[in-house]
Image (cartoon, rainbow, N blue to C red):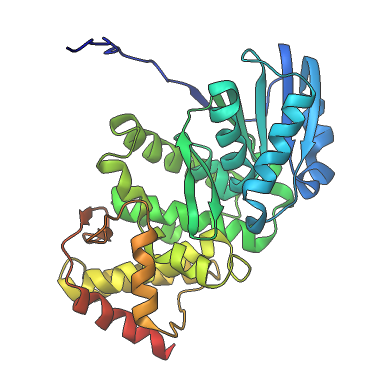
Length: 349
């Protein structure tokens, strides 16, 4: 005997991404702003001048990738329970990618899902982490292995927040911009090669183009069943670098920059990319003082860590590799010896 539950339906998760000075907003509901001490000290006053609510609370969690964990998630949840948030309440993620990912994850699980808004304050979160609904946290096994797809109701990208961004943080965001250009937009890559991103107008145009590129991919593959996985170019390698260094040596974008160089080396070995193209990518990353080398102490251990990647299976590792500049391929059929031979070249860095 079978009973069918007919749940086939179309859910509209569309939302707007605004790239401009924040408008004034009032919410007729309970709202909690989740942030960290650094962002709060620099920008909370500005945000509070733009936002009001029926009841407004501030939840502060420690700053840093190492705090993107269950303890911080529990801290946010406890505050929501203490203030009696309900399914009509809303969270605002006010910070970089760590804050955005954790806030979105809490929004996805609190009373089985409540609304949240992204107000990203770093370049990396503005062009990448805040767009697309990927939420989560890290654990001892790796990065973002616990999480959910939970789309925000809106994303407000205000360039004002970038005025206080340290150079390393800015460069980390550039790495994610380069990532999208290499895999999906050759014209954009060529623009970046000569662009001066210290010019605010040029930077805003680059942010817009990066967001448009990612939004187009997410619209075609929201839950990462295929095409969207290509946005993880550089991440399969980069996540291992982050994990090996306990998230304390490199910013996320810096690790992704290293990961792109490693992925490019594999692509060159396979004939998917020319040496000259790989050099152009590396030169663009170095233009912003991003790291492009990493000494692998044990290539076998490094390789085995790939299997903790969310895109991999029990028996194979999924690699995202560039096809020249402006193209990409996703494969789980790479010969281990080929990959190891490339990793061995990084043992001499």
